[in-house]
Amino acid sequence: MARSSSPSDSLFLTILHVNNKATAGATKVGPAVDLRPRSHPGGVATVGHVDLGRPWRDWLGDLGAAGAALLLGWVLLQGTVDDLPAGETISVPRDLLIGAVTCVFLLLFRRRHPVAVAVTMVFAQWTATAALGTGAVAMYSLAMLRPWRIALPVAGVNLALILGLFWALSTAPEAREGSVVFGLLYGVLVTTGMLVRSQRQLIASLKERAGSAETEQRLRVEEARLLERERIAREMHDVLAHRISLLAVHAGALEYRPDAPADQREAAGVIRRSAYEAMEDLREVIGVLRDDTAGAESDRPQPTLADVAGLVRESRRAGARVVLEDGVLDPGSVPDRVGRHAYRIVQEGLTNARKHAPGADVRVVLAAGGDLDIEIVNGLPPWPPAAALPGAGAGLVGLGERVALLGGTLEHGRTGDGRFRLRARLPLGTAHAGEAGGKDEVHGSQLH
Image 1 (tube, helix red, strand yellow):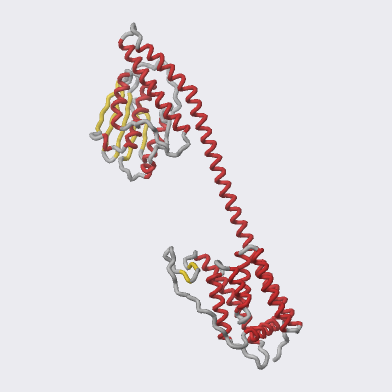
Image 2: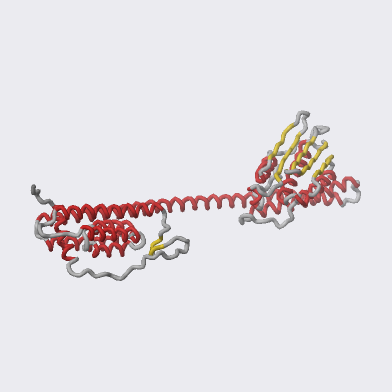
């Protein structure tokens, strides 16, 4: 039973006439293309200039585009075969082969050379009906991957060529209606490609803005931190340096006073030397606060575990009753970073004992096994302190941060008999993640 013609039928018939005219005569074979895999710098084979090591998402997108082109070409070819006029034939295998070759060409080169693929398909699509689907998808890829200044002229020339040939080779109204349908299809594909490109550019712009905002915020925080460090360093220099220098001057005058008793001169000497060392420590801390270079090392030699004995002797000269039980046979085997933290822990324990329990017995115990164990225990003061020294507990907080850097543990508090005990355990192994940090990140743990 005969059926009435439609715009799509006329479109297929027109495509058939165009293909027959374009392929009439002897077929010329172009130059051979070298498809042998060549070595890739990253170890992945390439064909021509195509990178076969692309992400799987790109391959899925390319396979989807090739599949859409193949499906569209098959629909066009099927419609053409169903509506062949009497006496005309079409080689379906040849048409399918050309369509498949153009799909492979689209699959391999549409991302790297979308303009070349689109321009090539402007002419190649007239050799086979199945290749028209590849040409349409190539225009979509061009609009998606290149700016509109490039995509619109190429797509416009292609569309004008298609419409011109349709109108020139067929005068039937149905054929012209079919050309309008094909033109609308091209317009939808090109517009969709441009919209996809705009969306991707918008997402990339938003990501770039978010990254810029994050970087700007980080810089503002860093600037505020540096300004705060500068302010702290300035206050410390203006206030503490002045008071400590006055203390050193008065202690020095008392130390060299001829009519002063010997024990007073000795105590004044301890005060003067301590004030001098405090000035050196203060100068170092101020330098650290003002130095915005990450990981800047101190110029002064840092204390080690071997210096704990000198710290105990210094406390004894100041009148404290301190007993040292040193169970570390070889202090030099203790890593410098661990020894430095151990020194600060003992220093904090002795300072707290002098502040809160003056005149009490203090016991310092060092023991090394798999870890370095430190314990400072002070008893109750024999008499109430004359004046309570101010303290905010920041020293113990700083010790906790120091110990945490090494992956150790810190305990402090009252014992059952009322004594105060400070106990720390520091790992001696170098495998801990904190050991790779190099320079300490905790400063000012002697602030009380």
